[in-house]
Image (cartoon, rainbow, N blue to C red; front, top):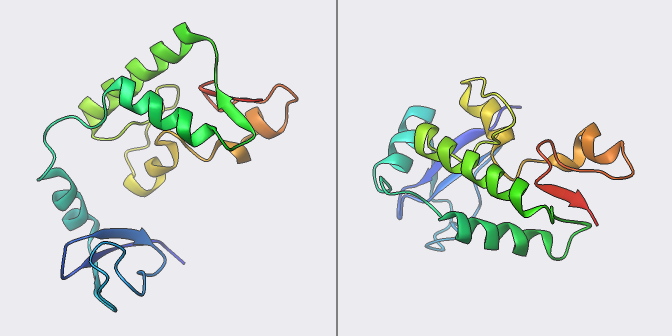
Length: 143
């Protein structure tokens, strides 16, 4: 089964998944999603937000909060983290999303979503196969 894009016809909330939510989490309308093509989803996502997303500081705070209750933490090597955040900022400016700066995009939107930071690094050998354990680029490490 392939993931699809869905748009709430009431508030234009977008959802990407195997099926749409039963109730829109934004406007609370039941059965409000219609399947849309990827092109339309990209257009909706790019039109209202020409300005950059989170600043590096805001993104750092978001990943710190994400790591907080989990078995991993943000790498304490501040220089490395700063360099990675610079790379993600450049990717966001150039390609629209915070792709991992240590991995190459395939230019297949669905496939490239797998390398938007934070990616699902818990399944990668760099994390689970090592005692030290870290994500692909080393932004997150085991506690």
